[in-house]
Image (cartoon, rainbow, N blue to C red; front, top):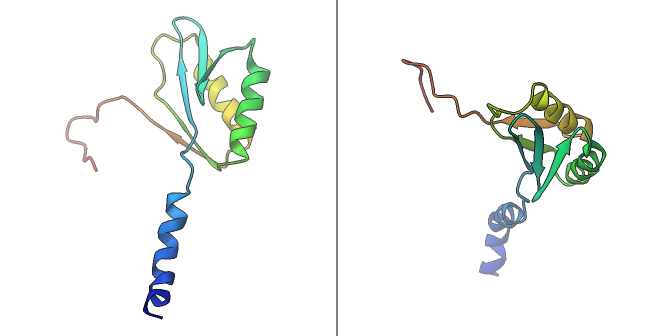
Length: 109
């Protein structure tokens, strides 16, 4: 009977252990647009339909996606195309990462 009393306290831990990793979308390319997600890379605009299908599949499993830093050398508009593809796939939340350093005097954390 003692063991059953602790069960409600342990239930949230079991739910945390099964939470899937968030999809991570990387944008890169040297004067081109390469979007990588879930171990596959897609050259835009030519492979946009395949990217859209992959993102839609991931959006059915997670409501949040993470997008990596804006690439310095990718062709103009690449970042915008990647963000639009993630939004169109149905993710309700999108997190953005940046490699930009904090401005002098800015609070971190």
